[in-house]
Length: 146
Image (cartoon, rainbow, N blue to C red; front, top):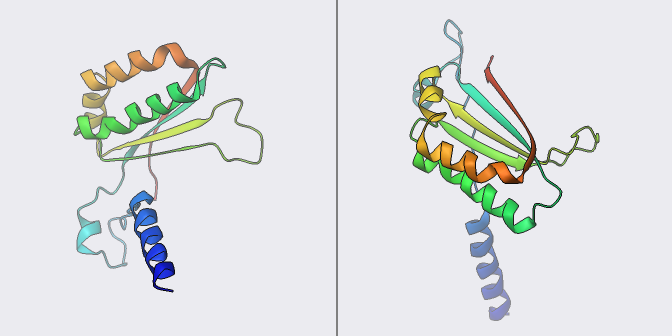
């Protein structure tokens, strides 16, 4: 019985370490009658999203894909212009992805932040590393709307 409890506690600790919590914050538009919390009052009313969709070459190995994922995920720690970052792989059931498997969303608080990110040496180094493995890429930037 005690052994089962210890196994359960160990499993919970391991799972807790594997879970990445991401919270998306939404601010209340100016002039709204809704009450803002102190945290949301510090967030920009709009943010600039930089969406990158990747389609890998067929010969790209799973290990190479993992290295690219790790390298992209490391950029926010190297470039302070990044306001937020998230990513994932395709799980759509509509079969409209046209071979694109990965989506990365880099969020900026301003156009100036994006302007600092794009030519940043860490971003350039990542793009050079990525190049040989990519069959196609789509990049879309947009300002969020409430």
